[in-house]
Structures are given as C-alpha cells and as structure tokens.
Length: 172
Image 1 (cartoon, rainbow, N blue to C red):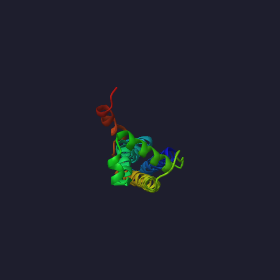
Image 2 (cartoon, one colour):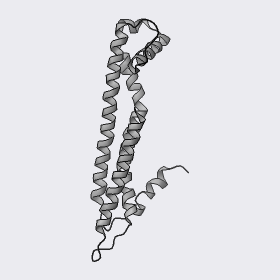
Image 3 (cartoon, rainbow, N blue to C red):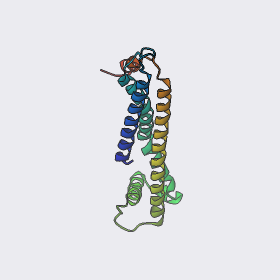
Image 4 (spheres, rainbow, N blue to C red):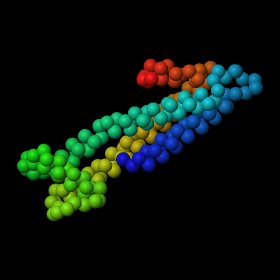
C-alpha cells in the first residue's frame, strides 16, 4: 500500500472530523440556550475518535491478513503442473520473481509466459485491493463521523466518553 496516500487520508479525516465536531458543538452555545456540559474541544476529539478508529481497524485488518491473501492469490495464478513440480524453495523463488515483475523491477533470466501473466494479474489485484481498502476505510470513517456528529447535544458528556475505553484497553 502507498503509505503516503493512507497517511494523507487519515490526516484529512482527522481534520474534517475535528472541525465538524468543534463547529457542531459551538453552535450549541447560545446566551439563552441550555448550558453545554462539555467544551467544544472534547466534542471535537470524540468525533475524531469515532472517525479514525473504524478506519484504523480496517487498515489493521488488511495489514494483518493482506500479505497472506496476496500470496494465496499469486499462488493461484501459477499453473497446476508447474506448481506441483516446485518444492518450497522453488515456490518462494517463483513468487519473488512474480512479485518483482509486478513491481516493474524485472528479473534476471528468461521470463516464462505464466510469470508474465501472473505478474500482470498480481499488479491488478494489488491495485484493486488498495482501492477497496482505502474506500472501506474512508466509508467507515465517514459513517463514524456522521454517527458521532449526530450524537452531539448540550447534555452529552464528551469529556469522559473515551476515558473508560483508555483505562480498560491500554497497557500502562
């Protein structure tokens, strides 16, 4: 995955979420309205958490399982008769050659036709999965933002809403 695009996506989501939460909370403050329980910064931080955590969960799931899924896909591109003839070292070498061809680096020696077609398929697979992971992360982040923004009201205790999560799930 392109780390720069992922980092940019997360930063844009963070900024958008924080600004949305802050401005929504500021609209609650009126001279004649009810007293707002939490400061706008706390509401903004709460919306930012509800936005970023789902996106980070999707990215973590892909980081955990993505390499094995990609490897399985690449192995499936190798013809069965060639795959049966390979031992583990030969399979690893073939997978490295296919990965090098897919990345555009090339390989030494003669390229077999199945390697070229597998490299093209792998490049397409990597592009599609990258777009799917980015779209899923952004989509869940937007849903989290909309949910958290809809929950902002004058009586919401935003300043302590994340404290219990941090106390129960973090190791000191």
